[in-house]
Image (cartoon, rainbow, N blue to C red; front, side, top):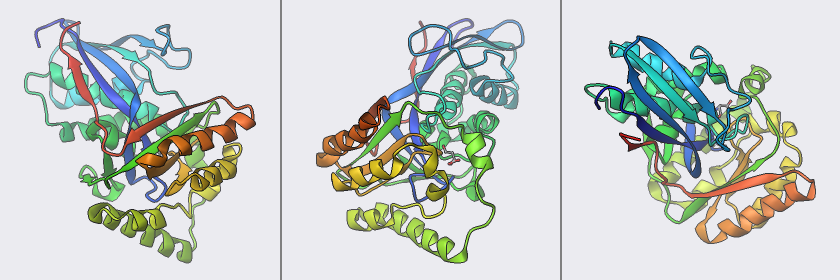
Length: 318
Ligand code: HSE
């Protein structure tokens, strides 16, 4: 890419934890994502010329201060690790709602590193961008977890326990399943939510959750929907967070009644997701939305295949 040409990248939102794998399992979604445009500048240092809301206006809640935005923090991490000369200008276009549990901060960080990578003389393989995107995500959410960054970068379903980072495993996705994600107009701060989690877990719960995690991964490799359904649960974190989402228990019950294999919070919420057979997805979406509607809570839904794409460079010139 020659100097001053813009590169534009897209990164999707994602479902954190996927119920069964707190901080270690993430799933990309389709239709909601962030764009970042990047170009080289002669002056060294990194600037953000604008952070745009989905309506194209300046974003009311996000800072264009490069020390306080996940996109620029991630981009700066990559730029300095590669000893690149000169500076970078970024434009961030938010598509993923903030405080939604849909991996908003991760999508900006991932789109930024994917765009800036294209500006390097020798772009890195996607997987090598993960630690830099994580640096941005850690600023926003207060922890080193990759369950939004990894699926946003790579697409699909990713197993990414902190213990193994920067290694992550892209899991095969069972055939014929969709995710349904409903975002109610409520706000939950992931950083604050993490701060209130209990420090200790009863050994019985820990054993059950471990069994579910192992079973879920085996179900993915065996394409075993029944096993997946029996393992798609969160016995430890969901009970601590459910009260932050109005009518969560009713939404979950409605999803299961409509044919979902399981239903839980997406990340720290307030979004709620379900996995279901493709043919049930419309009914599951309607059932979940109707509970929020009955409470007068505006909401939006995204239905995605499990194997949807991760981040991409969309163009090298504007
Ligand atoms: N896994 C983290 C959490 C981030 O649940 O706090 C989720 O997006």
